[in-house]
Image (cartoon, rainbow, N blue to C red; front, side, top):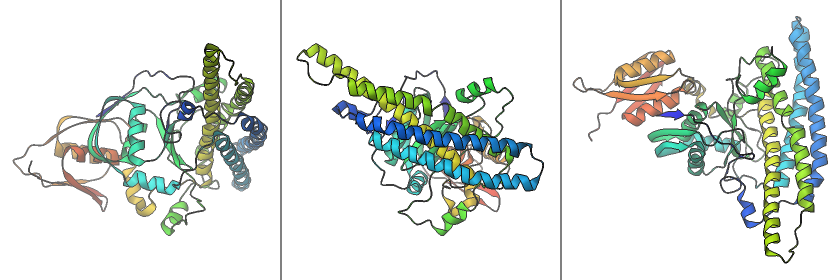
Length: 441
């Protein structure tokens, strides 16, 4: 049971889409010659530019205020600057949300019938049965999860699709599998507007940050692993429950957020924005113009017509690629803004203490033919809690063979153990308890 990374081959527009367009690889709508409305795309480009300019100006102001905030020693002045940041961040969020809506409109993306909270609930409540991945491609594993959930899952183009995964489990929750598979490759998933999107984490070795650091050598990332799935909890069609409202109140706040954490999150926004908008929009304008002026009428020559049709399909595919890059860059920025502003969705708020316990990150686990009781004691030691093990007959020798990479959470580890040995478990009064079920074969 392990994640194995291999060198994957990533195409120029390698963005997988499960459910959103109905299939794998390039949007399947092209197979039916259902092309984008190129005139509509061309008309949308100026508005994309206006929204980009608005966001860029606000982002510049935010960065300038962060420089002042970093240098000030006055608590009163620092609080005043933080108060000024909130409306700026909200203005930035409005612009990016408008960009998402505009881009989805020209792409013709169908709206999901599920709210983000319902997707989180499905992740929590869906149990995957008999999961057997033996050196399977990452994209195949994500497709399996998507089909089990009946929810679209997309991979950002930076996510390597050809990495290999080995995973063997009889029963586990979808959320645990998704967290596990993302952790193994320094990925993160977020829920936004009715779909799940998987991105590369911006780590100290991630290419966007490395490129930025070459120009700014003193910049470091210390909080890069402080990320979680998020989404818009203000769904007009669904009332926020009392439990959800209590969870919302415990979110991050610009007024009180640790300065280093705030600075790094705003830096991530700066890096995401710098690497996306203008480049993508130039390409969108260029490709939509080429598509509009490309030969479309039959020439009477079958060979020429076939070549023109192939060229048009390629243009349409490239245009969709750049539109999707624009879309996903905006969503990535929105996700960070929502977390900083305290507007991110909190998954499963009904048992906050239990969720905190289950999400605790673990060091690497390597058990080779290890006694089960000793393994459970080792797990508890890694978590930092006492453990009670019961139900194992004195004359019974039980062993476990399990490997999990550093960064997997407690829930994933417990799910693995329960998939190997039939047990009940609980977490009561700060202690982890396992009861072995001596079920006859």
